[in-house]
Length: 180
Image (cartoon, rainbow, N blue to C red):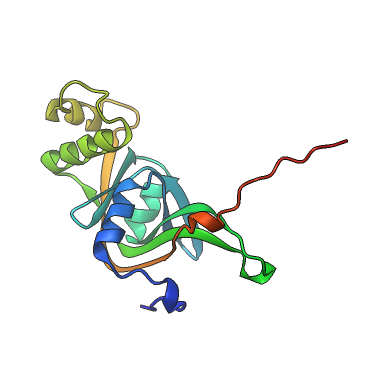
């Protein structure tokens, strides 16, 4: 696998990468559909060095992954524009991570329940007054519903990260124009 070309922006600190992936809310799952790329934005959790996501068990995404489980998962957050008196040095503050791995459907009820609970803790912390039950997850994974829930795991085999930190004193702040 290729490494990051622009070495000054490369992020190698695993703690920084982990914190970023735990906090980021949207990732993009890239797949190969025959000869064409297919990318889907989705909610996810990063737990124990793996990406987890869920969704209906039918649909194009699941079919593509069942035919080729090699995926690329990208997460990027843009923090604003860094200004400079020299226009060519104007830049963007950001963090991005690219994960290459293999996707796998999670069939183990305990693991699926744990991951869905992690999703709730990330996206709606404190909203539910009790933990998600295995019976609830099993009910929604059963075939009696039109679109049962399926949890997936991406086991990474290569991760790269880049970032350009916020420079508070240089961040662009929109100025209001006054029309006379």
